[in-house]
Length: 113
Length: 116
Image 1 (tube, rainbow over the protein chains, first blue to last red):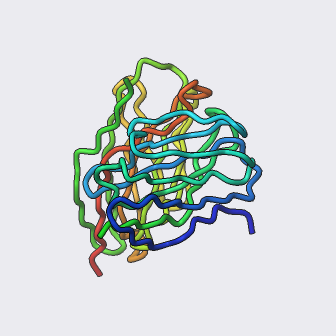
Image 2 (image 1 turned 120 degrees about the horizontal axis):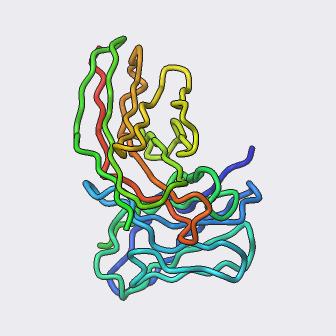
Image 3 (image 1 turned 180 degrees about the vertical axis):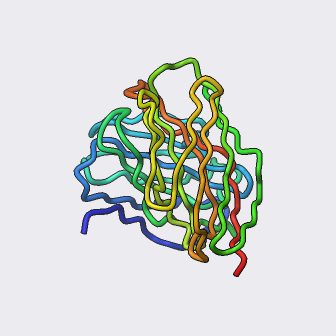
């Protein structure tokens, strides 16, 4: 079945540690996204990528980094510079630039202890 | 900048009744998409319905329909014959059509409860 797989589903991190959230898609979509969800704030865009080896900052990119070495994969690293990293993270993909809807993964819940 | 506003943080409906969720948006573009997404307790975002701004006809998907008022920049979702499984957070979202920013902008959501 085609879809988006995020892992891990739950992750605990100590302050000062970097963590990487995985996102893999087999939909053959060009565009991929990372959103952060906090209670009462909807979804906010962290980074997005339109093609391999290219990505753009979203609205809240500070403290995060990404890579896009393969079309299928778009991992997100939450660095120790992110001041409030506890949140729910959603990865999504889209067929191509500005066309159609986003398809979402099941999300990853990050908790900083 | 484009914005999306959902003014109803919570709504409640009786099973089998009809409920309407409101959404307004602001944009200077003429070509764009509007979406309603559902987020059940599992937290995966599921597309409910999509509307292209150039289409005058309101989109429908089974029990879900929209009232798209382009001039008023309003995009409400009507759920008919509500079922217990409809209980979820509903997000309205906007996207430029073919836009350079290539992103969806989400409202803050409406939590829908369905009473048996």
